[in-house]
Image (cartoon, rainbow, N blue to C red; front, side, top):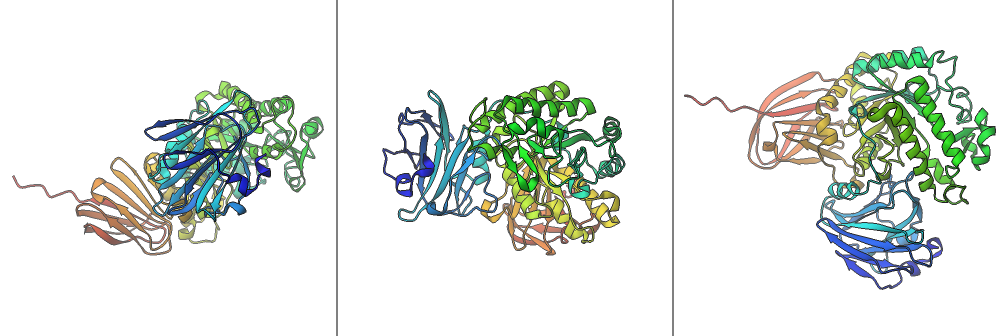
Length: 590
């Protein structure tokens, strides 16, 4: 219904109410929205009407707005015109029903989140040229008697604080426990070995990964029979290739003996054309993906949910895995506009049924130590009940994308955020390669380069920055994060916890403000090609010792300076580090 409405109808005058400066209009029949105010904003409660779908409009004057962010924004963070926008479906395995319009200071102007994180919601947004207003439309097919709530967060707080406050309230059920193992660096075989994996190569890489500081081994695509064909034509049987892994259970145990948790890749909704499962399940996979040589199972069928659950549970139980890397769940949305199966017409609801059963079965095997990796775009607040390694979408060798995507995920979840697998040119300088690791500092890094062939420089660089991450992981992943505006791609990130702070400069000529006297250690990471960074000191002057190191961790100089209020240029080698510590005052004479 919403898809057929023109702009005049979407902006039509209705009996709107104003809630904390936001115009709230119900464009369809139904009860007038109820509003509850609290210290953080307001909650709008909607009840299903007799006439079918519910369409809600939120609108504010554009004021000083400079960008609009939502979980699937990608690079598109600008203010789109309403006539150029399109309806998009969000739900459990595709983004989330939330967004934030923000100003030049990075403060929220309109921030909302719906508690409808499982079932599909249709969303549209944009600027009205004639009235200088920004509108967001949410279309929901509420069943008779069903209700939903839309939270409006109070304006004026920073984007990061606003989104964390919003999503903190959106958990749909209990979160899957996040064991400490989920927050340890991982080694993935994907970019390093692709499908050319076997027991000997993986075990050799695993040994080197453990030495470098990794705690997880992720075996990606290529381990299963028929994996070498085009696309995903060999996906669906999920049987180890005996030529590559003659005794897969023994191989898993060997890797675990190195101190690594072991996860295997699976794409349980994909049925390849060359598999035995294809004949058995193709009737439940009406949507084909020719470019990938596979079909996509429709989770609304009970037979599909049973097939997927049994395949995953069998892998973990038979081979002693610590968990799974579950891929391509977002492909379920290909069925969103098709007639439903026997379970439920909504893809999100069907996927929740599937994932709930899978979680319970796997937890019977691994308890609170179960590890499950999920990938953008299904890393929203509704998925914290089903995964505890929430990974950025594939962005090979793109440090900027990895930084932006991991910080985007962190804005909407409290789980363990993982970077996309890190890769770099083996012939690049250590300074160039280090910037890939810098991109993952505020997440949990996943390494995916052939460690066996690393140069001495690259090996030293990898070990140094993984060691830095270990030493500062509580600050980097659990501290207070100030990352600036989403449209500026988080070019300077400041993390602090207790008396420690880490500042990472991802672009030259940027200034980072800091009350230096508040910390006993401040680490400045220079992820640029420049030879210095700029610190804007607030508060009283502090005498500090500056210890600098290059990209491989080799000391390059130490000095003592007094840094008073104002701007200071601090020498830091390209892709290097400088740690500032206050100089203890001289002992007073007795």
